[in-house]
Length: 460
Ligand code: UD1
Image 1 (cartoon, rainbow, N blue to C red):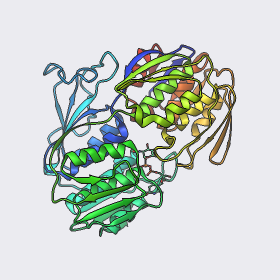
Image 2 (cartoon, protein in one colour):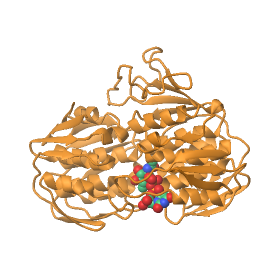
Image 3 (cartoon, protein in one colour):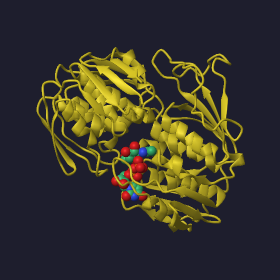
Image 4 (tube, rainbow, N blue to C red):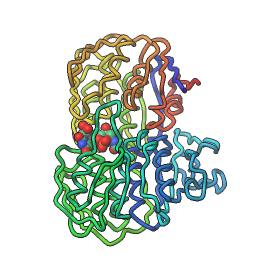
């Protein structure tokens, strides 16, 4: 199993490009199930979660073609430089995208994928346990499959490290649209000849729940209104893609989304938005090391809550049209945070801020309101010398002048990112085990950090 070896204490300096957003790419890949025509997506990040989703779609009968783009944003790469490959119905379903082709890393460190999905031969509306258990977002196929095929069998995701994370709200919404839903042998079995528009209200703000219901409603009969909808930028990106496919959606980005069902959707060429959590993570990594960075292809307005806190911590931040620059102070000031649905402070940035607070001047209070078990990074940060006390959903972090390298274990995606940040700031060597979590959601992290001068190496 791969590990990450970090020699800390070197300020990150330089410029890197931000990749496409994982949390926008995953639902948008599923949106291709809604049409018989080809959907071509650009700026798809090369991540294990994306590979899992492609595998899932391929085993349903979707033809998947993956093309590697030459360099960051360079879609004119010479033909044949990286030839298109097909997985799925006609190809090798076990190979993640790019696994057998040479890596092409742009100057700024990205090599996004162009993915074409053709769901005209969709014949197996099933999401098996083996794939769903490795990635909870697999549940995003449920709404589109039901709307397009009138039936879906999707394994229940079960628990995951950061909490129970049920899908009851997804099911409640689909039932309100007329679906018959049963749970058999760990699988949700949903059926509906044609879904009917309805007024839906979710008990809490749920991102993938909103996305699942919005996709299902696109092909339903009549109008669906989703109240208490998630306002995350990734929901808006999905809505924009669906609208470009012929869906009639208004209100995405607010807490009331209206969808007028249509008979069919058509194919589309669509570019995935930049990853705001990746952006926030590199801003934090730079802040922790006292360096400076320019992140290109970033979408600053989706990061207001994070940028605000970084400025409170003493960082200088300049927003350009599609880039963000940060210069860190000599020592950060502690900042308290409370996670909340968008536009509040994202739970996906909580762990990274705990790493910053661990070395900042002063005391911070971090309150996690979205997931019940999302402080597992705290015990690992303590191994590096952090002073953190947990009480329920609240962490009290007393900043220390320095951390010291040690062996730590990654427990989930964003927890891993916080350990990388702490390792970069710590004196000496930090070895992070189980970095497969990082590969799920960060495209070539060690290469991007190396491009900024970070001493980071993947070891087997
Ligand atoms: C998405 C993101 C994830 C992020 C999270 C919160 C993707 C692929 N993942 O996850 O990175 O951390 O939003 O911003 O976009 N809940 C229920 N019942 C449901 C649905 C949710 O009780 O049917 C609860 C969850 O357990 C959690 C809260 O609602 O406590 C929010 O979860 P949700 O927004 O659904 O998270 P995900 O969509 O899974």
